[in-house]
Image 1 (cartoon, rainbow, N blue to C red):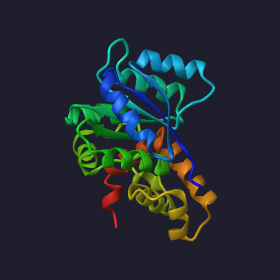
Image 2: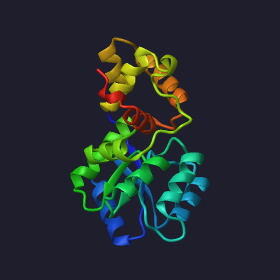
Image 3: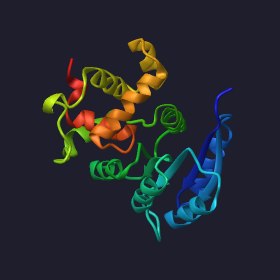
Length: 220
């Protein structure tokens, strides 16, 4: 039996939010545990509730506390929660901004129900989901931090870490990586934790950004 994915919806457009909620509640493996109309209401719930979501679907433009600022706060205070950014604007600046502050996926409001469900399930299973548009945007528009070493600096990443990083970029999960490399899932997790520390990434999405910026995904 698959684990239930706990979701919070945050959007000030009530009719739109209720529509998504109605759609998600039909899914056996998804449960909407809370709805908020702005970031402030969301943060209050997270601080007061003992039950936290696996994923927050976050609108960007909201009153009081917008989605960008709310995402920054959640990344610092509740780093295990995954944020899917939701917006009417499919612009490169919006994408770059949300990825840089910690969103692990990005959805436009004219996405299909199938695209929404795919994104939720991919994020739940693998920690992030970037489509081709977002991947290309990261590559073209986000600059490499000057404080982070390149993978070429003094063998900064080991050959095994590079292998695992490339498989993460192919959106393989821990078990799939372990099977492909003939190692245990625990060993994969150890290498992944080393990658997070070395690259100073906050999450799996950050590793993907690092790999794309350093063109690691292009190395054979």
